[in-house]
Length: 244
Length: 187
Image (cartoon, rainbow over all chains, first blue to last red; front, side, top):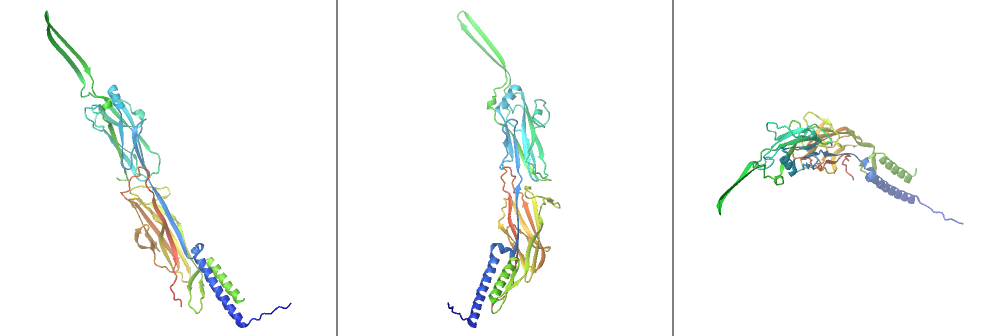
């Protein structure tokens, strides 16, 4: 079988070489450009380091409540917790003559801010059970120390404490303290001896008749515990830094 | 080696060199396009970890861990990160930029700013976190860079009584070292 021989001239060879040259040059251009711009090759042209951080804020907790009853917690809007003695407390005071009510105060302040609080008794009118009683506050170490007794002199209508120092803390455990509310019933405004008498005279057939009647009784008070206005003890707190 | 093979080999070598960390310097002028490939390197290395401090009390800096630290009103926190930049090679002047890939998210009352110090010289003053900065070009060689952040919790920062206060997020601060390509005419 005959095969035709292909004759290639030198000019043809040069032309083909030029074509190869340009094709290869373009290919290299594309390849290197791709290397420079592809995602994995950016590091060839720059170096990057990232710094990132997210810092949490310390939390503050404050609540107060009669032991065994629901407590009131402070909120973002109010830096206080009110404790209200109930009508039952007023009845006990009226019936028993004295009460001692333990209040639990819980405090937490994380970070570099301490927490201090104060409590103050209200000033009810004398025509109320609490208003007619001697009431005072006492800091105690446990509810069991809150017992009836004593009648200290002086003004003990406020207490204050600093349960959390301003040293840095990340503790999640609240500090617990107790405040005892003492109350001894005094004479009510309407309390005392009460007498009532009646006399009448008249006539009847056959002669005059006169009659007299008198009675006396000891009235304690007409105040009703159920009518007692709320007796609210305000526990207010603030946070502070060292030196404040 | 035949011409096509030589060109192919040159292209392969260029690709391999690029992968190995070689950088372009420039296009050179000439009657036909040619590549001038200059070897070099460009590195930005953190020198140690970011150091965080509680600097609330003047004259005292206490190391802290930002992952566990609990901030409050009145706190002043500082963070410092040293970098070493190294640009080696022909025409390897470089430029440092500080930018944010995600913007900082600061609660009300919290302010944050930073300053860049290059080779011991402060580059301007403190500027708000999130505001990018690009330093002047630096010649090839090794340079020291310090990023200094200051975060202040002002008096307007409320007590976090509800426990729902937003954390202070400085965002993603990105420090970049880029090669500066010399300007040349291409004819």
